[in-house]
Amino acid sequence: MTKFNIPFLKYRRSAYLLSAVIILAGIVSLFINGLNLGIDFTGGTIFHLDLKEEYQMEDVRGVLASYELEGVPLQRAGRNEVTGGNEVIIKAPHLDEPTRRDIIGAFRAQWPQMTSDDVLRVDNVGAVIGRELMKEAFLALLAAAVGMLLYITMRFEFKFAMAAILALLHDAFIIIAIFSIFMIEVNSPFIAAVLTIIGYSINDTIVIFDRIRENLKSNRKKSIGEVVNVSINENLIRSINTSLTTLVVLVSLFIAFNYFVGGMDLKVFALALMIGVISGTYSSIFIASPLWLSLRLMEEKKHQKTAA
Image (cartoon, rainbow, N blue to C red; front, side, top):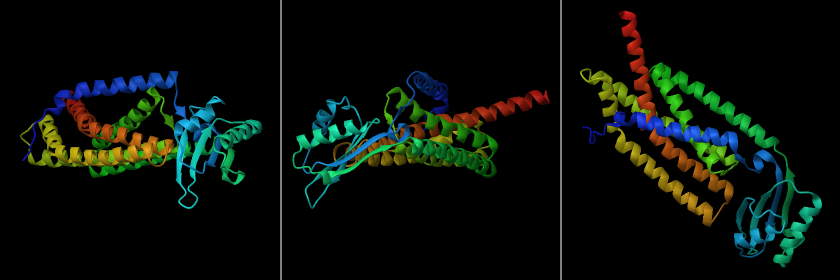
């Protein structure tokens, strides 16, 4: 039996409006601000230094402030159990050779125990890898969308497939919109997070679609809208439990990456996944199924006009 009887379809226009506002704000932000692309996409200089002792990020930023680099991404690379050293990775814009030498000298002055061997890496990297990654991610997304469109059409029907793909595009753009609005750095793990969320979101959507299909067969006396609403309610506990369990893990990872291990790249990855899980759950309930209902009703009205 259905444990809930929440009239989700009653709120579908409000859900459409909320999504439209976020997406429109994202489009405006993309036109005005664009995306805050990280070094993976813009190129720059990478420093990998072993400071040989415990340090605070504020101390590293204090050294970089003299070069107007206090806002660049930093990553704590971990602790060397043998030497007691502590490493930091700094991702800066392109710097010339004299500036790179000056920065290394400033770090050695701040941490005198550093030697030349503790400068593990200083490289200028180009944006070619980032552009290739973006191209491959787009092709992967396109291939996944086509594959899911064909599979869902064969397994269910074309209207289910269209609703699912539109919901997935909704989820992907919600993540991009929020990152653009708040100017959060976009790097390689961000692309991986978006692709991961597409796989996560489609799973929940397909489960609800399958319930709708089964209920359409067993509840022929109910209207299509009632069947959709009952189906969403029947899967509500599953959707909430799955999302909350996933969010607990992601929040734990975000805290760990932010305060204990990892750094900016992994923190962005966890943040994008958290946004995507919330958006994916929301779209499975409020976007995908109501979209299918709208497509189904449009088709019925078209058939009625043709018959008339």
